[in-house]
Length: 300
Ligand code: SAM
Image 1 (spheres, rainbow, N blue to C red):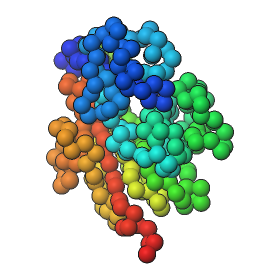
Image 2: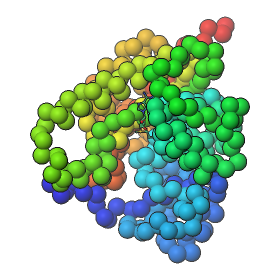
Image 3: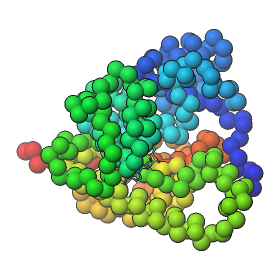
Image 4: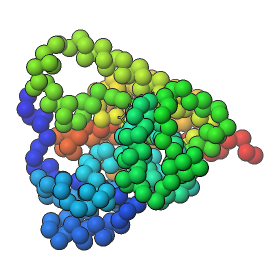
C-alpha cells in the first residue's frame, strides 16, 4: 500500500506571498542557492528541486514565501477575484486561501472570512502575512467567528458579495498525512465508520454549497476539497447542479489547459478539476460555478 506515499521525486513548490515580495525578487533570492523555475500555470508559484528543504529559509520565516503545493495554490486563482471585489471565504481557517485571495485582489476590495471556531488562529495568520492590513470592522479583511450556514445571504451587508470561496471540511483523503493513516493501528476499525463519516461530510458540503448559491450578487463560486472521494466531489456538484442552474449558474472551467479532470460521472464533469496525488503531490478537487451579471441582475 506504500505506493500512495508521495513520490520524493516530485518537485518542491513554493508560493510567493506577493503582498510582501514580488515573484522576480523571490526568484532571484532563491536562485542564490537553488535552481528555481517559474510554474507555467500559476504566476506566483515557483518550482524547486525535489527534496529541497526550505523550512528555515528567511523568506519562509518572514512570510514572503509559503511552502504550499501546486494543487492547493490553484484554488484561489480558480476563483480569480478582481481587485475591488467583495468576497466571502466561507470556511476560512486557518486562512491560507484567504491570504492568497487578498494577494490576487492586490489589497483592494473586501474579504469576509468565516470559521466556526478559532478565529484567533486566522487573525494571527493574517498579522503574520498581511501586516499592513488593519483588522477592525472597517478593514479590508474581516475574520468572523461564525458558522457560514447561519449567515443570512439576504442581509444588506452581503448584497454586493461577488465571489465565494467554499473550501469546506472534508476527509482530507487527498493529502499525504491522511493517506498514511492506514499505517496507524487505529485505522483497523473497518470501512463502515469511514462510509458514515463520508456521508456526513458530503451532506454538509452539499448544504454549504447550496447556501453559497443564495447570495444575490454572487457571480463566481469555487468549491474545493482535498479529498479524492467522488462522494465529496463530483457527487456534491452533480446533486447541486440543477439548483445552481435554476439560479443562472453554469459549471465553468477554471483551467482549460489542465489535463486531470473530474470523473466522467455526469455531463459537464469535464469542467471539474482534479489533481492526482501521485502526479501532483496532493489530491485536490476544484469546481467553479459562474454566472453573468445580466442573467441575475435585473438592471435594465
Ligand atoms: N481554506 C482553508 C485554508 O486554505 O487555510 C482551509 C479550510 S478547511 C478545509 C475547512 C475549515 O472550515 C475548517 O477550519 C473548519 O473548522 C471550518 N468549518 C467547518 N464548518 C464550518 C462552518 N459551518 N462555517 C464556517 N467554517 C466551518
